[in-house]
Length: 493
Image (tube, rainbow, N blue to C red; front, side, top):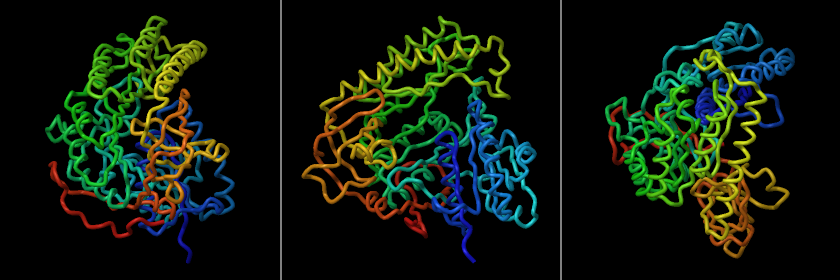
């Protein structure tokens, strides 16, 4: 009997992307194999997001398109998980009765069992837990990339931002112990991974659960002691919890990248109060000043919401003023979206769409001007790039490849020159000189200065991606992680 094939479709944030890696790891341990692009899979899993207003329409529209496939092949299974599943619960099978399994954010480890139960009972299985059943990092994971990986430091969020539905869907913050995190990082490096991104809804409140409010800075420094780990990033910090020891750790730990993504959301102190963001614009700007004093080359990015209920033109101008002063390398800008179940959804003075759109366009224009000016200043600079896969949409027609600089900027480069050893692969490391700066990327069209072939590049060339076992050690601590057994499957297809 042939193994059942699976496909996972992911919507939303980095948390969802990483959860999908855990779902893939479990399915493969249960005997499923990833479907190739041509054949229709035996199982389709939707890992959903509930942050944006159109998330519901996107899911139910996609499920509607799946109905003919399910009718043609009743043995096919459809599962829906993630934040929208946690929110809508049994409503999903009422609106789409051809769905087989619905599971929430707190029990992603239940998927294989729920699929088997649904198949055995010939009816839909809906299981939504109110609190975390198993910390996701104790589950196996099939990683998406051969060279860069996510590593969760915490799940959930203790903040009460009035626009955000995440805390009600992800639950209260739960911290992993440092030893577990470091063991997972070491396991990834042993598989050839060069870069990790430490992931949490609010990474710099990490450690509060086990009584060490300086734990995140210590964790960054401990990552600096892992041989073979070339780059460390993290997302996302909250300005209210950002401390100077983290800035010191970033500046003093060589493999921690000088990149900071810190959400602003609004430059208006009045709007920040309405959002329940427990900092003000002066505090935010002070952090940026301290970061740049320690790391003049730091690239800082942010999130901004336009059109929050009651936002006046004066409030919006305050946001533009902070953006001008902050000189972000880029910004993710969003039009405010009402989410049922959030306090902001019932606030008075919801703004008209045309007003929000006009402000959004003004903000985007300003940020593009700043990004372009900042990128032009980099022309002539030598940069180290970790070669990436799939980040340059026009690479095939321009005969370029793409990579990320240490500060996170996207660089399209020409893979040529006397230093090139064989072919340049995703996962290899090259150095180039920037020849052109655009608002959203950089170009390096001269010959490469260096090219280093890596084990990550070998794995990418062979089509191999790391598969890691779940990691759990239990006790907090820093320093060398306890010895871990090598992953049984190693780097596999």
